[in-house]
Every structure is written in structure tokens, then in C-alpha cells.
Length: 430
Ligand SMILES: Cc1cc2nc3c(=O)[nH]c(=O)nc-3n(C[C@H](O)[C@H](O)[C@H](O)COP(=O)(O)O)c2cc1C
Image 1: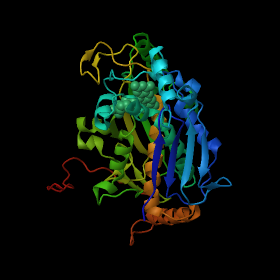
Image 2: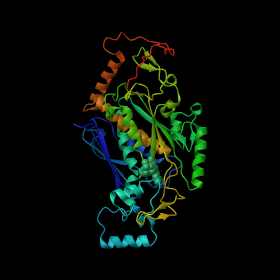
Image 3: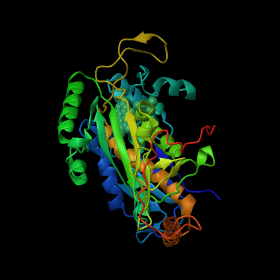
Image 4: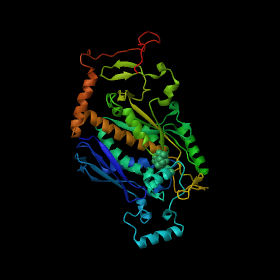
């Protein structure tokens, strides 16, 4: 018996992308229209290249859904690449006949860049390592799969998980927190979530967004690119997803891997993240106020980002991903040729994005949704959505009552111990 898992397939300029989701319960509402909402969000954002105007992604639901609901069997989604029409010969699936090969060679000789072998490997991309590892004399097969076009399949899968988790009262959203060194200021995040969602960079701080856009314009005018940071937040999680008992059952570890697996993400923070290292313990750890009358455990702050010991603690989950600047530059860096090993003045260039942080945030949401689905099913799994909901409700009720033998619920007002009050032990836990 295996738990929930998913697997994507597809190349950037191949016929289509696909994803199989296995282990979902029956009864989850799924429609192509609902999936299209997230696919559209992934394609937006100031700083993206021309491709987004060509592709208007829509998932076809090919299996696992009947009359708008999952039926417990694997769900298969397909997102066709509209751009495929321009790549049919270059990305042909069937073996090339002599005539096909001659046509391709003629296209390349005639200056069609799509048909030419890519050998001037791009710094910062998968080109060199991928081609050497798989034994290609042309980078095309590597860049086709390394491309973040693959994330359309992840986002489609994430949309199915969004529907599942929404039925359990769990909601996931993201926003752009930083671009090109310009960060949002929490004090001036005046936009509502809907306003931020509709803004060019999916950003809650209008003043910061204007400066972020200026950074992107500046980079574009220089043939350059910029990175940034997105933040994903999940609300409505019960206490107790994940576990401290083993490294691969920690939710923080699984989320870090999931976010880090997004193309161009080079760092992950949970809660206060690296900033914690610059503060004293008393300034970092979230004081536990107690259980309120409704049975909800209250923390005074949420620097831990909703996770302690690899387990959700009932506070909102906060995960950030650091996105490096896109590596395909309109003014390419020097590089080397894959075949000759000699230095070349300019790396390969093909149509590319300048900045992708808002899109990366939507992909981050998908990865969080997919990861949370696995952990929710591990905690409260069942074959039908109603069964999962019942399991979770019963568990939530038990958590709200506290451990066996706990007194009846009362509002508490615990305060943090004064430093040096002697409440801390003298030993470490390692
Ligand atoms: C939404 C999104 C769009 C991207 N678009 C491009 C692009 O147009 N050009 C490019 O060179 N890299 C792009 N990337 C990044 C590359 O896919 C990534 O740098 C490459 O696969 C190498 O992986 P690594 O950066 O994780 O090492 C994009 C990444 C994301 C998340």
C-alpha cells in the first residue's frame, strides 16, 4: 500500500504535458474550469516572456473523474502545448525518416534556430551537466525537460489538491515578497488578497511593487534578468500533520524539498527562516498562550511558520522560496561549446522570461498543496472524501479537548517566563 503520489511527463515544446495523481479519495470535486484558474495564474506576472501569450493552458481530464468528482482511481490530466505546432519536426516523437532528416537539416542550414543543435551551453542552466550525463551531442533534449514549462502539470495537479483540501477547510495562497532586492514592507501591504492577486506582480505592497517593476524594466533594457522571493501561506491546518519521529516524516523537510524542487529555487525558509539566527531565543520562540474557549491553541506570534518538530502546530504555515535570476540572458554570458570544449563568446539564447517570481509563487502553492495532501491523507486517510472529513473532524475535536485527563477547557493567559527565572533545565536535548 503506497500513499498519495504524483508524476509528471512532458517536454516544453513536445505535444503535451501530463500528470498522474494516485491515492486520492473518491468524491473530490474536479472540473477543467477550476484547474484552468490556477493554470492562468501560473502564466501571469510582469516580466514573463512571449510564450505566455501563445499558451493558454487548459487541462483535459482523461481519467479518474466521473460526473465532476474523483472516483478513487488514478487521475490523469493532460495540458497540450499550443506551441507544439511550431516544433513538430524538431520535437518529432516518431523516428525521423530520411526525408524528415533532410527537411530538418535544410531548416537548420536556412537559419531556423529551432532546428539547429544547441551546443553553446548556458551558464546557470541544466545544459552542460544534463547533456554530459545523458550522452547527448545537442542540449535540446535536456533543456526541453529542465524547462519550467513542466510546472504547468504540477499546477494542474495542485489545483485538484486545492479542491480536496478546501473541502477540509484548508486554504493555500502565495504572494510576491521580493524582486531584484526590493522587498515588501509589511507595514505598507495595504492591498487585499484579491487586489494583490490582480496586480502585475501578485504583490500586496503597491509601493514596493512599483519599484520591483522598475527593477524588471531595468534588467530587460540591459538584456539581463532578476530573481526574488515568494511566500506561500496555508490556513486551516490541524495540529499534528507530519511527525518528529523520523526524518522523512517531518513536514518541514518535505516542504523544503518540494519548494526546492521548483526550477530556479535556490533557498527555502520556513517562518522567520534565516532571520532567527540573528535574534536571541527569547525574540524568536512563539509564546504559547494556552487553549481558548473554542479549544484552539493560541501562540503569541508565528515565527516558527506553523511548524515545530516537523509537525503543524495550528498556526498558519509560512514557507518562502528564493528564486535566482533566470539564466537565459538576452545579452548572453560567455560560455563553452559542448562538442569542442572551447570557450565561446556567447551562450545560447532562446526566448526567455526576465523575472518569474509571481509564477513561481503559484507553483510554490501547488507544491505545498501536493505535499499537504500527502500528509493529510497519512494522518486522516480514507477512500472517500467524506471519510477523510469525518476522520479529521473527530481528530480535531480530540485535539481541542486536549490530552486525556486534561481539565475542561478554559481561557488561559500564560505569560513567558522571565529570563533567568529558573524554569529552563540546564541540559541540552542532543
Ligand atoms: C516559472 C518559471 C519560468 C522559468 N522560465 C525560464 C526561462 O524562460 N528561461 C530560463 O532560462 N529559465 C527559466 N526558468 C528557470 C529554469 O527552468 C531553471 O533555471 C533551469 O531548469 C535550471 O535549474 P536550476 O535553476 O534549478 O538549477 C524558469 C523557472 C520558473 C520557475
